[in-house]
Length: 248
Image (cartoon, rainbow, N blue to C red):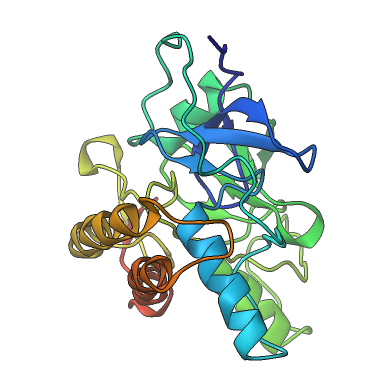
């Protein structure tokens, strides 16, 4: 019987624990919904779909940092000990990050904790649920800086940067949950947090993905592609969905 590792947020945004190591010597994780993922936090239907697309369409670019060439270890049934209670993946995200020991710092008198990413692509969150870059700037602020590098801001402490404030919105991602109004003091525009309707659609797509996984070989059959297409279709809706107001 296997023991699970400590909870960690992987590049997909999913809260996972390591359960094993596959034949490629890469860790295998189980997410908060009990689904197996690669070390990037991606599930087998998505990976198999991408592999099939790359074979059929040379030059195809995955909508993920995942570069896995197989699904080793992701179609295996593992028996593991019941883990200690995991941090609740529901909001507030800021408190979840504290529970798993995420990096923390204060920018312009506001604390923020790191969610994922590195370099100019780091994603951080403030206590209100506002998503910012490592310099404490929201996506809209960064876009304004890029559009007009000479632009001046009223607040002299604002540090200009060239960051990319974008993140995956996968099914089960800690970034795919909208903060509750109870924890807010005011509303601010510029959020990238999707609404509840999109999450309902995502759940339906995940059912299709689960069905595709049953009995599949690692080279991805037609049913796996169909299930993964459904999952990726919903994720595309997340990425194109209009911005919602968030709590500042």
